[in-house]
Length: 257
Ligand code: MG
Image 1 (cartoon, rainbow, N blue to C red):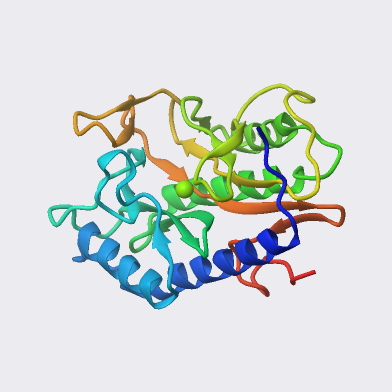
Image 2 (image 1 turned 180 degrees about the vertical axis):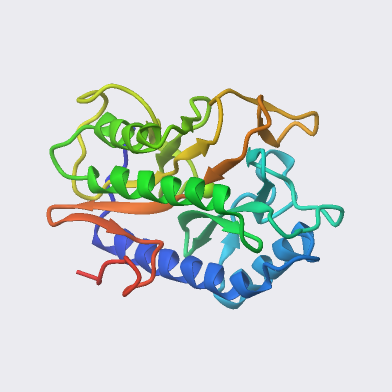
């Protein structure tokens, strides 16, 4: 069942999204060579606490952290660890789902530690694919119109689009219907209606799109060891167009309506 949010729920989700975006902004200066992904996760948890937010992944199927932090050929669901240390040239993906007053916001960004021109193009393509997907999150379109736009944008640059994991509806639960694939054919799936809230999250690879789950049972990696980028925003569908809840107003986020 797809839950369309009423005005009260939307106001809470909007606040949750702005706070989560602020958490990302707060931790970004820490992302330097030498810091462990566990230290990053702990800083995120601390920042969430200051906003009175709850990390939704902590406790989910036994997962012990508020974030997933994935390095280089790890696509998503990397487990924070004191042994995983950011080094110059690393491509680090941070994914956080957190709730405030019972409603979730889900957000991921890809960060480059230092400069790596190859990875930079990949990250830009992932961001472009996310933006292209969001642009299709309009009343009257169908879910797969988002998927097609993401795939087209990523493949235009010669990158792979991961098939095995997808975006999702979001609200009082971290994962709700519908599923939002990152590939597909146009005009399929449920009609997009005002009040629907979707977590749109392209996962883009420099090589082939095939992935596998590592022996830790969580970390998703590319089979060909190619670099992967992952970005995610929580988006509200309105009659006036898509409203990105997890970007700060003035940085691509939309004013409250
Ligand atoms: Mg997420």
